[in-house]
Image (tube, rainbow, N blue to C red; front, side, top):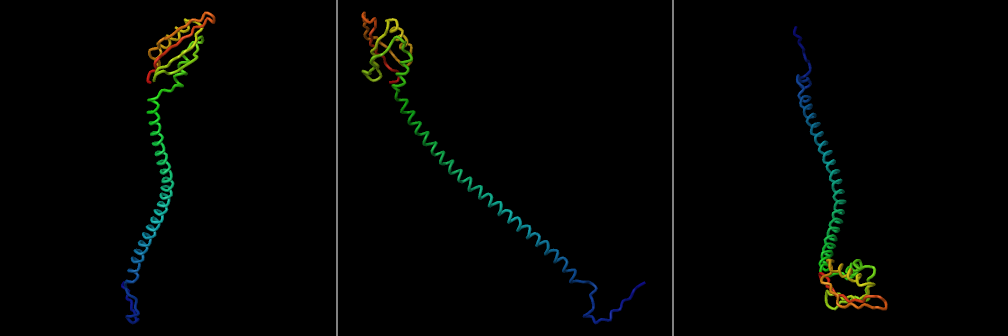
Length: 178
């Protein structure tokens, strides 16, 4: 059965069989919604990237301060090392008399003591002193001969004092490195 429809309205007022305006409006609205969603998503990503950039900038600023402090510390370290190198070069060329005297004191037996210590020439020590016995003096000379700091110890004068039973002596020795 076929249904016959009769439309008595004038053609301007009649509804079209196809609703072209509705058909075109739907895809346009969908496309606009897609474009709006993409724009919103991109705006969100842009805002998120801006936040990340702000975080990176703040990290960079804190790291820049630390880097400046590190560079300052490195320049100070280089200056300190240069000073230490100069001091080492100066101290290598010089021998500390204090260290030599302390070392000599460790070599001396208890029964030997010095009254005078002097230097006649550069690197040569002249020592005058007393010993309780001649064997104590020989023991001291033996230690000087074996020691690495002193070279060529020589006994210049020995006097035996009968009254005090003391032995007066005079020794010269060279100091290594002077």
